[in-house]
Image (cartoon, rainbow, N blue to C red; front, side):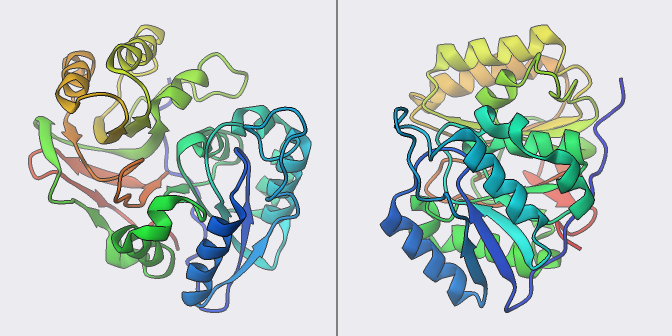
Length: 311
């Protein structure tokens, strides 16, 4: 099976760049969106809100409008030549429902751009990688509480977008060795529940072989994390993975119980594993580039990119 390969990177942003904000998943609180847009403007960006960002589904309150409308917003934003980046407004649920309605041929033709999101947006990171060959940024969403309130989260994303060479190494003080060692590969990952949900779908990634896999999640109790990881193991999706970085596990129960599951299910793979790397649904959420060749050093708790996240 072909190992995970490096993906095409978008260009770094410059002051004055237009960035599109889309809502591929859950409904977006208008006040939070306004605050997030002000932060972007403070960086010298010109945010453009897609037409259906503030929509709500007529019968399914967990969705930001109709599936086709959300997919059209993403396609149109990506294919707009005046837009330099596409940022997600929030996660929740819904990306899986619209991912097959996106015009991936048009997106491939438009070329790579900076794309930012996490949580439910994991489904779109995987689709961009597999169906377009484009890298993405596992980073905070524009209307998410962490982005609005935490300066470290904001600076991690800002630096990655504007000065990607300045954040070639990710290694927060919280990072700890779960399994020692050093590995080279291409970064991928996101919410582990979304990765498992992609198994068996027509365009799902066949394997994480050769990749540096970054995992986190929210609201999944230890036994459910056990089930999710066991599914990935039984399917063979984790066969040949080069190394694993673990982020936050908010609302997943006492961390010692979560850690026991992670050690039990991932420790037997025989690859380096680093825990508490400071990304995901945590009070501070650092940006992790996906689709980039890198080295994961579990002994020092660092990820070092071979190249900047953006060109």
